[in-house]
Image 1 (cartoon, rainbow, N blue to C red):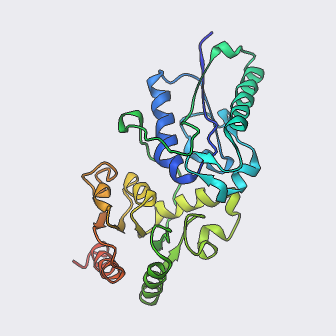
Image 2 (tube, rainbow, N blue to C red):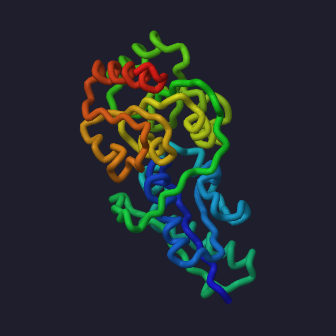
Length: 273
């Protein structure tokens, strides 16, 4: 019998799911000739795996997804290595039962379940766009990632909010002021990430510190302005730039310069320059 491919279970955070687990899973799937494949991850991120049938997605335990604050890199703080091995065993047994096959017919891959967050090579990843219908809008979206300080975050959003009526915030628990994020206010656990991506895909442009949010914007060629001392990797001609022609990267973290850069970028997007 032809082998069945299992990938997961992944119980870590969103950042490392989009940066590593998702593209690694796609690479494994492609390298093995696109066999029948089952992926196990958080139920509210099923939309990330549009290359497998919906029924081939196996959600991890719901409480692990709802407890987002304890998702850390590739792991979950409440699940030790021994318990993770039990999750892997249960994943395999479920497919054995559902498919009527032997464990010998199963090939399983996952990222390393370790606190050290090992690096996966660029050549072990295939990056593909997330296939979602956008929420088309005229919003300027600010993502208040915690990679910047509370003071800098407050200065930037408060200054910009006085100048632009159409600015809104989206984010997750890695962000400041999550309660003010539009995707947090209705059914966040159920559809927060999906709605977040749909807002990004349909917006006027995005403002965010350089991070995985910048990566997602570049991957989908969403207009984005980002900043930070280590920003070069996100420039359009670098690894995480994906040739995004609408990406403006500021290699600086001075909040006043960030605000001035946003003003410039807004004029550029509006065709005023």
